[in-house]
Image (tube, rainbow, N blue to C red; front, side, top):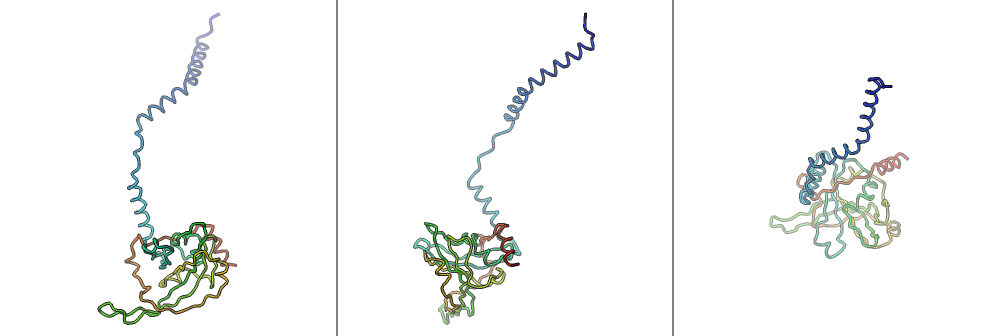
Length: 237
């Protein structure tokens, strides 16, 4: 008995579909090979171009208008360190608290010591009187600065020990944060010692013109969102 034409057509169609399903991996592999042949391999990145891109991104980041800024300087910690300029302008997108700014982000400008232990006394240097010089550049009268110890920072600590009430960084604008190196002294002992507010004579001024500070001398200080939330929670308490 010969099957009807309709049944033969159904069987034939099913056979074709089964064949196509079985050949699917081969077809897909062929298409992938053809696509790979048409797509040229990526060109190797030039290290100089990558450095230039990062430099341009840094410049755009720190030269924006509306940022808060506080001057920073520190002691040298070795003979080789003496040859480098340590003055930097710390840039802030947010009005962070001093305790947040002196947390882990401050080690972008503080040098770390081998062994993971280093103690710094952070001072606020406020100019009372600028140095006076003659037309020939000779010092006629030294300047005067008020030096206020603010905090003890240690490489082995995750947060600073404040010596005064916490303040927002906007309160520090116009003055200089100065980091005095105390080597490997025990930071707990330093924090427990008496720290007096003093006035010192100086031959240099702490004043600066923010518009004249280059991008190379600026450092963006940011904290992670969790750090900011914890800092805000501490202020509310």
